[in-house]
Length: 130
Image (tube, rainbow, N blue to C red; front, side, top):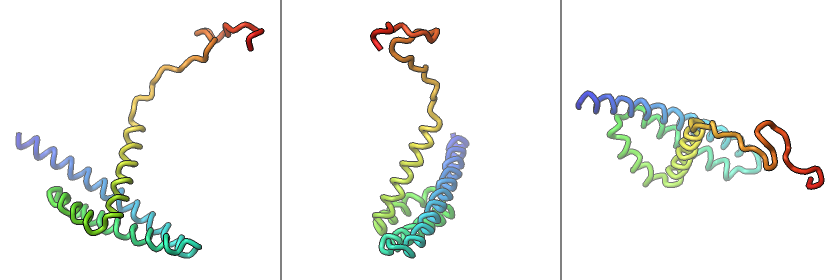
């Protein structure tokens, strides 16, 4: 039983590190976009995006360096200190999860046939009804 718990913790830790790297990449991209926006007409939004990206990157680095048991407390503290960034990360995590689930879904649905056609491809509608 202890081997199974240890294995589960090891797998969860690896997944935590993968998620932290993804979050860091998203933070980096957001920071770059924010910098570009600051140079354009959207300086206020750009500043916010750049700060949010920087915050996400530092959080991701902290998560990757910690034990899995410490991450829950960090997430709670981060949510209190940076509620908008926390919500942004939650939304991004939801988006990533939905994309992963959509990509892995079985897409072998039978092809829908159009009304009036048969399996051999011939059309059963009369010429006058078109």
